[in-house]
Image 1 (tube, rainbow, N blue to C red):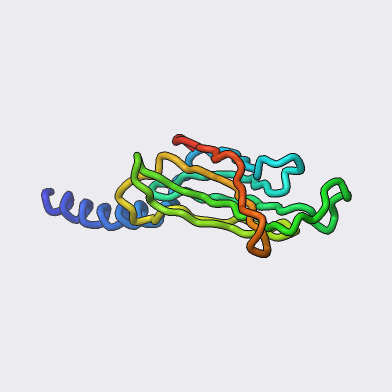
Image 2: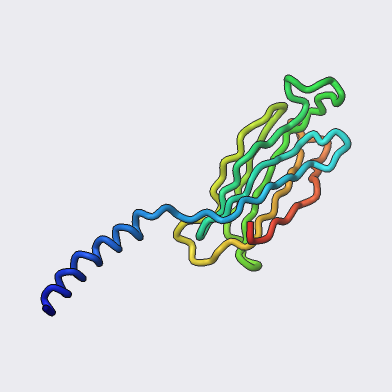
Length: 152
């Protein structure tokens, strides 16, 4: 009788381990994000979704630097390009920082902030769009940094 229990347990444990290892990483609620360069024409702007996973955060969306080829001529080409910076924190500790660049176009944002093996869980993401001249003058400027806190 006892031998049957041991055999049943011996076959059940590997099946359970396989089920846990093969299970997909659960995703938490998605949070829409937006940040822009803060100027009158909104020359630089980024929009998309932050998806928190167990130990990292995925940012997907777009960064647009105006004017794009399909924009109306409301704002002229100002000789600047846009950079959206995504900064991830766990408490006050910087975990990861990545940036996406666009010049008179729309580019896709597809970033994984953090690491699936990280010990600290990301609890805050700060997104900021800055504009930089294609040549050295005039100086760069940035829009307001937008903070997103967990849960995302």
